[in-house]
Image 1 (cartoon, rainbow, N blue to C red):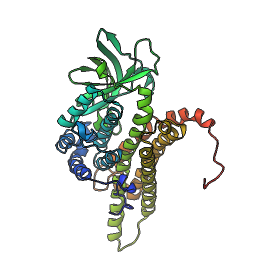
Image 2 (image 1 turned 135 degrees about the horizontal axis):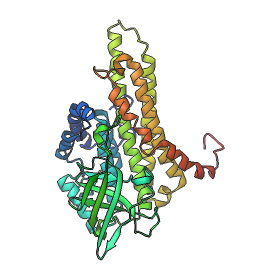
Image 3 (image 1 turned 135 degrees about the vertical axis):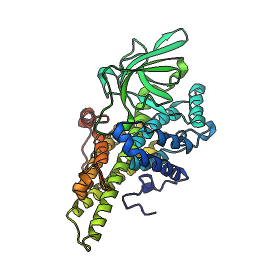
Image 4 (image 1 turned 180 degrees about the vertical axis):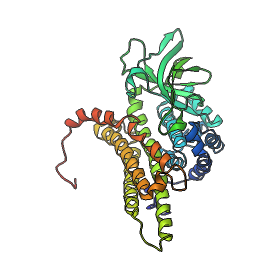
Length: 404
């Protein structure tokens, strides 16, 4: 298959075997696309798309085969996120966030029978897991938690004011961060997983999800109250989970959704230019220059994600590499660059279509794509990322050569 055009997959750039995941993802994408306008207009959870995702058994594919899953790789998931992102950004982002949590559970369960039971349930019952890492005054600082795990005998409880839990009401479980204990530092965190009915969600007063884009993610604020045992805690400390899995999986999977949005917009721009040329006896319209810019930035975006994906897969199992400053800087900058490139691509695609792209109706409308992709730079704000990288970067020697 040609990998140079706007609809080529991110994963296929590095020759990842497709198995049947891509065909199953395309079945979900077809349903998602049919409902995308309503999901966006009415800020609805994409119910129909996730019914089809369950039918296609795509929610538990990362679970190891020994636990009833299919042992899908990160590349497999990235490719699915890319396909879904082209059809409905909210569907793609929800799927990506679910799979980020799955990656954390799969890679850091260390044989915990309780976590393995959760993984078996996800695979057998196609459960959807929500993510709760944003909290209180800390906002998007996922490396600091306010709410602690409280122990009473052999039971634990958590009472957490989560300013954002994406698709929380529609999920079958929640994966959340917390301080290890009431006397622990904010950065001494654990990751916990709770399934219904181990927790309740109470909407935070005055907090709703009325946003410019990504409206179907339904990312409202809740008070999360959960009870369980130490078995609900993922064995590895969150510091390790965050660096080795959470950050790279999030940035690669989110980035692939954004690349999908950019591809959908560029595809519409391509169709618009071709249509304009047919109607003008082959005369190239003024917007063709912007289509060229869109296609160029899309290729850069796909190349960036493919390179970062390759680096992550090479580093899997190598804790020293995964926690190194070079790797952490590379993977976090991937998020910054991918989000900016995706937004630039969609803007160029809209300009290629002119008024037809600017309109909210018609075959060449790119308004929804633009509104959705503008969430990319503020999901874990790029300014926060760059500021956090500034201090360690000051200690990094600058390269003295282009070729080495």
